[in-house]
Amino acid sequence: MSVMIRNGRIVTADENYIADIFIEQEKVTAIGVGLPYKAEKIIDAAGKYIIPGGVDVHTHLDMPLGNISSSDDFETGTRAAAFGGTTTIIDYATQLKGMRMQDAFAAWRKKAEGKACIDYGFHMIITELPDDYLNDMDEMIDQGITSFKLFMAYPGVLMVDDSTILKAMKKAAENGGLICMHAEDGNKIEAIVRKTIAEGKTLPIYHALTRPPTTEAEAVQRAIDLAEEANVPVYIVHVSSQDALQKIIEARDKKAKVFAETCPQYLFLSIDDLEKPDFEGAKYVLTPPLRERWNQDKLWDGIKNNHLQIVSTDHCPFNFHGQKDLGINDFSEIPNGGPGIENRLHLLFDRGVLKERITINQWVAIISTTPAKLFGLFPKKGTIEVDSDADLVIWDPNKTHTISARTHHMRVDYSMYEGFKVQGFAEIVLLRGEVIINRGEWSGRSGRGRFIKRNKYTEIIE
Ligand code: DUC
Ligand code: ZN
Ligand code: ZN
Image (cartoon, rainbow, N blue to C red; front, top):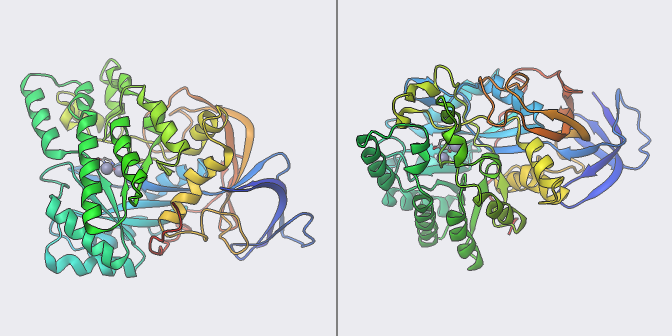
């Protein structure tokens, strides 16, 4: 099927111009003014922006947690992502204890195959790494899983000690993998949590109060030091606070290869949300926790100055009724995570670009181009060029809507952004040349999403 998109304003991470785009065989095959080709389908994009499809490098679909799983699976979660203008995700597969990475990969592939509506890749979470598992990391790289997540939090479950971190980092230095770090001091937090519960303090707000920013900053510094020792780049996931950001800025000023993301929840929500009455604060129990509001401006400065290069969602939804309420009597039993896969582009356009916190090119960079580059998807994804995949969003910059659980497409019974009015709308979304969102309506197919074998991280960004 050939498609011609006429007269849209093409916006990439560094360009902004009006032209036609011609698509054949899933790819962009020509870009220019007044292209003379005949197409089976013509889309008029006059007055609209055309941006590369969003790339969300931090999601948790169908993620097991104790006896429950995150409420979106690969079908509902990726369809919701498409409504939000995201056409590629990188989800976290988990090598649970006792499991080899190959088995974890197979298990996550099975969750996605036949269901995913957009393209996807995986990172691998490593929870144990005896010497005879080190080769698993090479096998993952060969199969296109070129990044690994390590947890410095959740002792006894996901946390790995510093010697394991160093071992994984040294292996990554050898095979070109990228280490993603969940940086929170798990032991310190665990001690504060036990003491707090013993004092009878069980409300959701104590989730945030027992994980102070110092526990994040300390772990970020440790991760940076370990990466320096191993001589390997490190990517800090879900940076939530100025304290943690400061450590990243100091390291980057010394030319350390440290990269980092933040997430919309840290830019638009705050610790005050955890104080909502009737246990509603549980809707905002995320890790790291939401911080005091003043951190938001610091994170925006971090984005503007390229100390934070990516905004991902950390989409990890749990229903308020039946899942979050497992912690009604004890905040530490509330499943950690919140929904957002559908909201990222809209929030960042409305409250980033339109509020002049970032330029429109920076918006494209943080939501699509840089994640594609850092995680080995570029230039197939993350740009609009001849030969790139025709993953495109035709964005109406004027249309407004109000975010609500009543109308969103994520399979979760609340929205963290309920009632937020946003301007800018993903009107038409194409995945490899096929229209999957047509004027706000679903027209894609479950199972059309393809596993993308990623390349290794290359030092193509500063
Ligand atoms: N870390 C994540 O990255 N996602 C959900 C919960 C967590 O601790
Ligand atoms: Zn994490
Ligand atoms: Zn996460």
